[in-house]
Length: 241
Length: 241
Image (tube, rainbow over all chains, first blue to last red; front, side):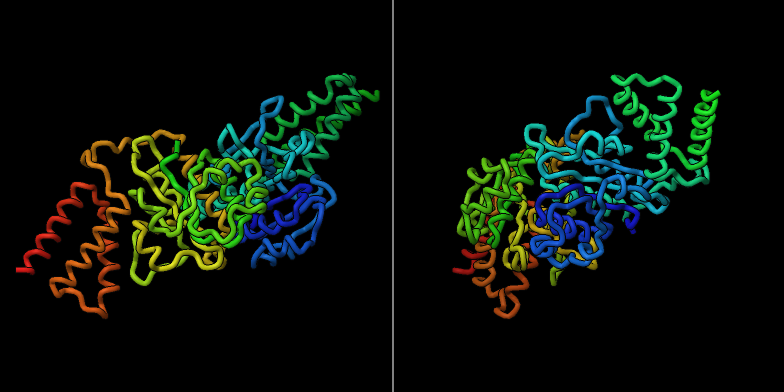
């Protein structure tokens, strides 16, 4: 149950918070923890704050980059308290649970949480299908990292224990593309646009961002991805003539 | 908003947790913190973990007993992960929010959280109208104190921001009895039962517990309380003849 949800912590500064996250997860029946270049890990503070959830710590996987950590995930949510310069699809913790915390859900879902002081960077949010928001006091929105994870895991737990409307059948049979496949697609897309003379250097960053948002929101499956990449290849080859 | 909710921490051992609680509360627009004989307070660890919510710490009131801390509260909820020997009315964090986190709610509501290691004692649970439960993993239910407070405050915040069905009118106009008034009533009740020869020493504790449960569940208002106390007085006096 809920094993398809991967809690991903990016560059956590305080090892105690990692332990507190492990404890928060285990309380809600979750144990899939991934750490991207944690500042100190393993660490006695992490073990101390895990308070009996040290099995979650022991099975935590450590990665060199966020891209690596989410490679096998079809849906990536990035916790963020701030708005983006361009609007990005977002869900609240409760909406996230309602959409995906049910038996019909077959995808790997990454719940990405950023640094204690600065959250996630723009290029990290670019990798996300949705921003993940926890409603809180607009005058003071400074949730502790483990507290934020606790709220999200709690919503998943509470919702997964309930009846759900089955969503099997409202999409085709093909599996959704993983983040790794999407990344390769975006590289291919960007290269193709350069090849065909479409990308202007000053605008390329914002254009790519909007394209990422578009295709992320589409939630491509592997069959659709193959089609798009075929189109890109033909575009590239067409211009070599 | 939500100022009628009082977070009451009983004999907290780790001052860091008090700070983390303050932070959790402020994130959800709450600032009414009460501490019953905290082990160390004020303390640098509390201030550190409050992380900007130290105004909540500064305004926290410290009490010598739980009875004192809840005197002015009409509704008292006690967080508990375990079942009681006799069943006690209970609500989940979400049900609590649905019942009371709305504009129509005029009562003071105490949310009582116990010690990190042992929760609340039986005599403290006796003071509660409801047990407050947070659904979690039956195989590992060991929420950190501040994490538990975070989840409850989050539910209150999310619900209070929503539309509600007004409950004005489904009770009379009289205010609900405070915990102090109920306590006086129970003392009076116990004394009366002794006076009239009803109470047997071996059974009195469990009988009083059941009566407390009964009248707490009734949620007496002051007018009803006056009537009951009048009956008790007349019973006492009747036996003096």
